Image 1 (cartoon, rainbow, N blue to C red):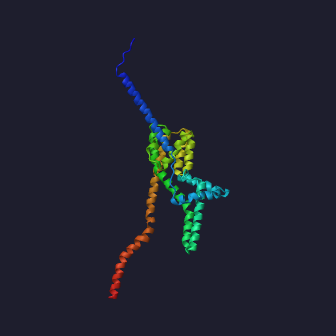
Image 2: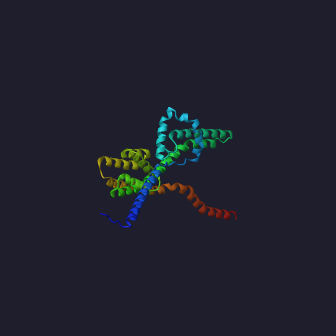
Image 3: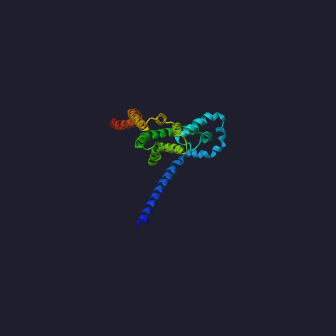
Length: 294
């Protein structure tokens, strides 16, 4: 029995095949784009003072390798990881750079003493010594503040995705793809990449908490890990954590608003009050001076 085929059937089948092929290719391209975005190392720029010292660190690296600097290396490595600079410079090079800056400061101080300006040399030496630790602490503080500000919104997006029926990993990938690359998104991208490479999800989240060291983020991650181990609904947990973080953020805003009047007293006394006194008193003094003379 011969089956009659409509003349348009081959064309329709070919069109459907092409559409399916393009759809699959587009999905694969999007996946490759996401993976490349997450696998690129977020190498950050170091201050110009550090860049000037980096070419000389090879000469003093043996000092930083000394066993007496073991605790310093561990502490510095943790600080660089918390600040997001672990991929830019390691602890050994950072300590070596601090030694080079101290040597530069000592040379400048000797030169200033020869020029009979020891105070300037002493100030520059102190700056060279204290600038690196102050800088890394400032970077960590700024990074933690950025993460804390973005965390409630990320939890809300994650909650909506999980409650809509998506898997936790798929929800995390979509959030990473749609958000701009800030400090939190950078850490989430690294964690997602580690999970994709085969690391257990709970271990990847523990490593994230240890790497960042932000207390609120650590609390959220520990809660997610515990909920996963106990079989509790992650959606409800994320909702509770998001509400708690918003309440904490509101409390911090109220605290800062309450501290503002106290902080403004010093600039008010040093700059505004003397200017007001000069504007009000000087004309009276000048008028009295003219009256007494003439």
